[in-house]
Image 1 (spheres, rainbow, N blue to C red):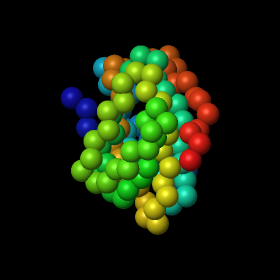
Image 2 (tube, rainbow, N blue to C red):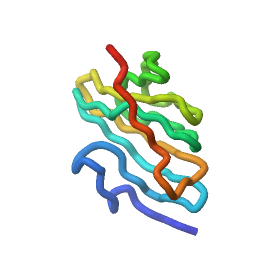
Image 3 (cartoon, rainbow, N blue to C red):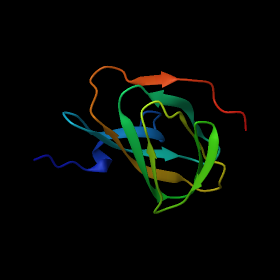
Length: 117
């Protein structure tokens, strides 16, 4: 059994970006926050899939360079090798839960050029 609280963890970029609530042994789970105007580099995972459940705000996801607008209650599932880019073009914060599975102890991320918007 493991119990954690979101407030006990730091975002990668101080006040935004991803923060992991757990990493392995079978799954990674975390929270991602993007403020208005912020984005997260286009990338894909070689082995794991990544699921996003939108908690707050709206954002433009680009999955394989195709724009997908999301809002609270939506879920996005990215298969391995699906590129995904997030950009917050709204005037409010965006927050989502993300799940990556299976857990990969080595780096499973490949960054690619952002889509042309």
